[in-house]
Amino acid sequence: MKPIGVLAGLIAAGLLAGCRPVDLSRPPDVRFGEEACASCRMIISDDRFAAALVTATGDVLKFDDIGCLIQQEAGRARPEVAYWVRGSRGQGWLNAREATFLHASGVVSPMGYGLAALPAAQSADGLAADPASRTLRFRELPGFLADRPRESPSDLSTSK
Image (cartoon, rainbow, N blue to C red; front, side):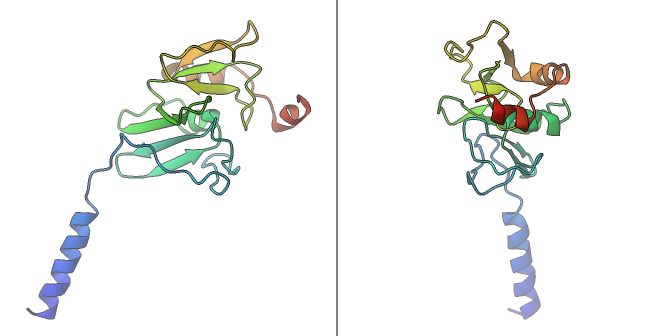
């Protein structure tokens, strides 16, 4: 076989290997304590509040706070994007579109958005200590966050 034919075959094989469809049904891996949030650049260290998105082209963005994900997406939930959030009670990754979110003053998230994710069927009892707490669906989060100020990180450090 001529060298040009071998080279063309290798290039074609490489292109075909890169054309595999992205599996949007699997959350990405996050190296907690090592990777930075795509929005605020803070190190992703608390797995109870981490979030991520995966696009159909294979792009992955990881976040240290659910609110950072919502702000990054500027209120648009794109149908071709998989959104993932970590369960606040150690449930691992949850599909954000199916999860329930709790906003409460007792939820101290890394960037002060105060959002905790739970599996859709799980109750927020025990996390919602104040009457101002609210449960929300993923599609409601952009409007909810737009209407509320978040706590600044300095407020969070003095509230303990």
